Length: 177
Length: 198
Image (tube, rainbow over all chains, first blue to last red):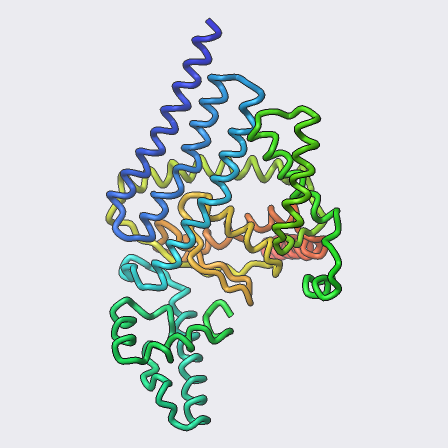
């Protein structure tokens, strides 16, 4: 009798976890762009994994197993947001987003302002030192976040890649400060 | 003492600051062996000590304060939000799907400490529906991508929610100064609310 109760609890927990996997799958298919898909891909499994681990704990009822399960969830908690952030940030910076889906975008203004400041600083620097052939004269794509693959290739093709790289490595000029 | 000053003097990290890391490493060792007997834990402690000193990482600047009661309450509210938001995202995926509209919202946090900004961003990222896209460290501003935001009120709600999460974290493990600033702030808003009603 007791066994049956535990089995039922385990079954419910596992179904709950599976439901979260289903949510992730549906979200991946239905959501329209990278950033909203990131929500579906990374988030429901925080709860989903917890439910699966609880199911294991109920089924085995072993004190030795509990710390391992806790460690599994803690590492999930520590790593999931980092990967989500890295993909989201890379996606945003390389413009892999659909602006028409963003009703409010407060980061866009900040990036624009940072780019303008960078451009102004660069123009000043250009006026100071004489026309250096290694410096890219076109300030349009001096901000690394704006570089897409095509521009990178073009830059490399024309030999301006070096100037671009030195821009990228100059400290304190990106929007993070 | 700042990190730089300590490095200049070449002195070690104080043991008290290293202690949480060591305890965590010993716990991890015991958990992986599934053996919490004294012998195994002592051996784990020796290994933890060597690992922490040979593979040296910049120390996490803890505040030296931890309130377990607020910590438990925070864990409870976190689990509640996690369950609620998971089902909300599920609902959005099924019924809104391609018609979803989102927003990127800047939230200026109170605290300037790296630990607090990281922890807040982490917790917000774990709860479905919000994702940290970028961080401005100089002003400790988080840029959150939030699902299903189409009006200014909803954006304001996301902002208030993020600040609320930070407030809970400050109560749990913020420094004394941050806690005092938070208390002053809540007292002021309460006063303003009463004043507005009168």
